[in-house]
Image (tube, rainbow, N blue to C red; front, side):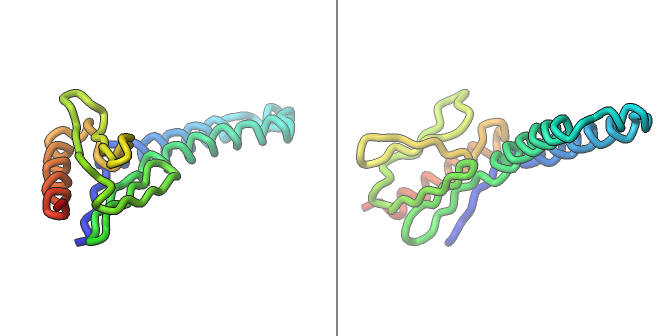
Length: 141
């Protein structure tokens, strides 16, 4: 302890798509002739920067998702939101067949998605869910 699980596929996708996004817009700008570049106004440039920046921010949020188990409980980072749960608050970890990610059932009757384990990772995701269930079982009681 502590043990952290992170999605593999979404992190790779974020790096690849972020690089492609920034690279495509940079290549497009560099391919313009000077006359075309001179006609682009500041508002148009800011719009492109806002679009690319939003795309990169969303990809980064996907890539930073994780779940960390320690002696006191679980810390979930889903995108830009961080949540902390004591072991007594977590009732069950489940990931039905075909689900994109597992969910935690909480003692108050609510549930929360665990984006730090992603179903697209296949066997890695199933192993991570088994490990998380084992850690939860070890701390239940």
